[in-house]
Length: 361
Ligand SMILES: *Cc1c(COP(=O)(O)O)cnc(C)c1O
Image (tube, rainbow, N blue to C red; front, top):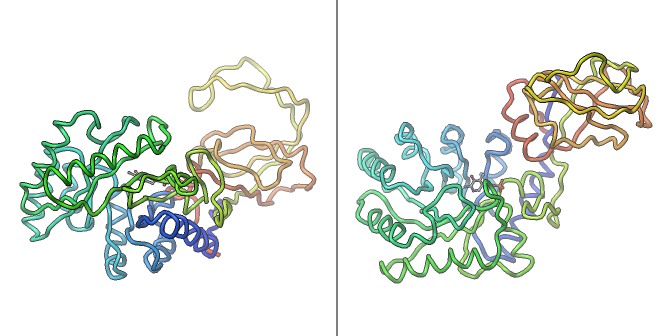
């Protein structure tokens, strides 16, 4: 059935080995693989859990960890919840995550209480915000960092496992030697002041991996958390391809349901489209327009690249996507399949959509 997301498990495996080589051998970091980009799909998770190079498996949603915590733990991997826990999911966090990322004392108290109830020691990683302005204690607020650390240390069923930063997600701030060094400074300060050893100093996501090859990852960083680098082969700081990884492990396929020659300019007064946007049209004269059966409900059209370079994406409504196939060398017919490489947005939405089948090859 179409639309479908074709997942080449061998390509994913070589991507995994590619990022492991860079992260572990060159960068001397532990490897945390992030599964949310493919909605923690089962076969991909199996690959990650079975692979000896993976140290931690992580997701931002406890719902996803719930589906594979058992498998991961059996394989000797620790499970990590990346998004700060909601107060309503504390019980599941303690059950399914060995480690959770945190920045709020109120939440830490709930975790501590619940861990005691479940007779567990729960590991926490404290998020430090180095300027991207998503989650974490702001790095200049020394008092807040130190107070939170001593709060954690006073909680009997929590263990302070490490500290971490997240960059290039909200503020699009690029990790560099200078800002990541500040995380290492914080690690040293905490270790000295409280006479302890932090197991993990996690230097970010797929936007940090480029620093390893430039030999600019600060020495104190000992972990990276990689989702997109593994799934799509991308360094996301500058959008370059990682050596040894491919960007076509995932291919989205959709079927043509109408193919007609029509003008490129709509006729009549222009209002707003299905999403309240005023559309812009380029006059290309009469063109061959293909409608494929996939839409904004299933995918992000701005991060799809047709494998046939003669195809142009014109737009989409909820369930219909419109392509200009005039310049293609292929003579398309109704019923033909059009294939696309996916970027992060299209991967995330197609993996989440109940209308897109996932097929492994
Ligand atoms: C999503 C996420 C990651 C992984 O990001 P990628 O860019 O896919 O590597 C890492 N850390 C946190 C906190 C995240 O939310």
